[in-house]
Image (cartoon, rainbow, N blue to C red; front, side, top):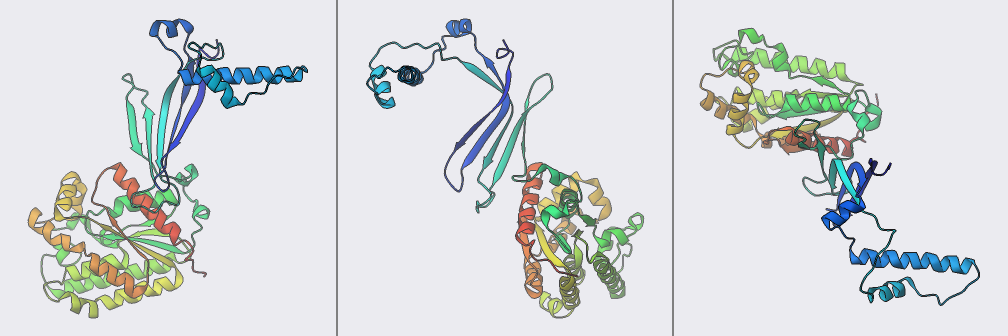
Length: 386
């Protein structure tokens, strides 16, 4: 009776070969199928199962005979299965049929040592509590202990004096990924200084081209004053972060790209790298002396992605108002300068992770965060003692 009311249980099935092996696990409950239901529905056990059940029953019977002092010819297990296979009909009271009803299913593809792009993967299906009983599917982070979701678990990551800098073009996902990552790891999140220091109520279309977003003139003094101000404040924030772990948005690398963006009509990239870029590199190297620094470059595929994300996020339009949406977005896309970020990382010897963050949605976000966590773990030994 207890069995017929359902017994909680789980099922595990593994398959495939290294490095893309997969493991399926389901949680739910078992219910016993009644004899009447078996007869009515025509449920019968497989012949192979009955053969092995009969062989097991005879093996147990022979063991009991030996314990009572009677010794018969000792057939091997395979001999018994072969002998029963010659009989036409088999039945056993030992065989019963159970029905498994899952309430949660997950699959893990690959393992901790799998070194293939997009692996390992972990997917989950859970049964909805709604009236229609739909299944909900989502991608989840593999090998992430549940306690990592709680803040201030730095001991788990063995981090010390670490700065994780997220860089990339407008709408590349720096703020979204940065907040998620800092919450997951229990770290401080430092927003982009350009956004913090601007007066968003006074922004004018294309004002970002001339400095703090409020000016509409191309005077070089406005740009110089703004970039100098950002550089100084970023340096002060570096000093205040020594001895702490944090995720920082844009940082010196991103500020340098903005500096070039505002002057690309006045100087070539080579001129910028030989002149303006040097002071940013010096500050990056200086911070690297007192902290372990990692740079994550979030790349996107085209200006169409920027247009699409701005159309779906009204706050993006408020943070960065433009005069001609399509034309100015194409201009903004030059901030997606992988070559310049790679050059800065090479000059400062700071580890750089390049991630294509073009895709939208929760699955894409979790995939990006998983890549960053692997990158951080790989370089977690780069600790600097104070």
